[in-house]
Amino acid sequence: MAKKRILFRQHLNRSRMGNVLVFITLALFGLFFMFPIIYAVSTAFKPMNEIFIFPPRLFVRNPTFRNFTQLAQVTTDFWVPLSRYLFNSIFVSVLATVGHLLFASMAAYPMAKHAFPGQKWMNAIIVMSLLFTPSVTYIPQYVVLAQLKIINSYWALILPALQSSLGLYLMRSFMATIPKEMLEAARIDGANEKQIYWKIVMPNVKPASMTLIIFAFQAIWNNTGGTMIFSEEFKVLPGILSAITAGGIARAGVSSAAVLILMLPPVLIFCLTQRRVIETMSMSGMK
Image (tube, rainbow, N blue to C red; front, side, top):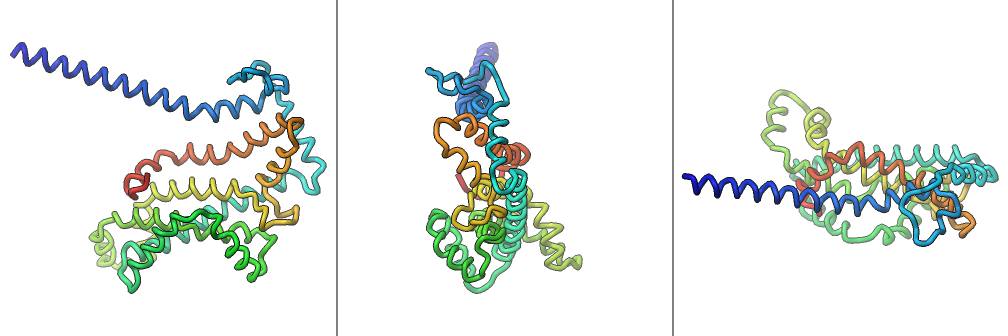
């Protein structure tokens, strides 16, 4: 018995040591992946002499808001104020994200829980569409939007964002895990398909919804709209800040401030919804 207790204690000690090593390893990897974010935040507050110092410093020594004030001064020469570009980005991103979530979930529900002719072929097409990069669809999208006469408008940025196949794939994969018995019980109680969709299916796919919000918002927020938008009143913030950062070395500080501004909304959305991402990936089989 004494030997068994010793072996058991040694096993526990090895397990604790293993947990410590795993924690340290994960912490080091976490710091490694956080390095670009920390550097971007620090660089946005660096004066010009610290930006070009060699070897580069991770943290700022003399923080300043001069980069942000210079950014505001540069944008005062634009035809429309910076607040209009910010409004356009927020308006397009929010409307496209919510619309994509609704369209993807409504299309995924019958594909996951109803049988109809051609269902297997449609599922195969959705999976195959994930293999293609978005640049493949740029020309067809432009032709369709031009035929609809919505080039150079908000719809030129919103409509293409509604048809992403990744959101449909995520929602269909997650809805397929909902037991059919739950839906049949709701039908027996008198619920129609609309009530089942809103009150049963959507609450049970909340993890997938949160993950889809992250992907959709990030994609539309970073869209410059350069090929679809030509009027200043419809241009979005990433497109304008990209033009500002093209000014060369003289605008290095302004570019750092612009990068921080563009980075904050997607990071904020991810922090609010990241708890659901791992669950969704494990359920959908994505890596």
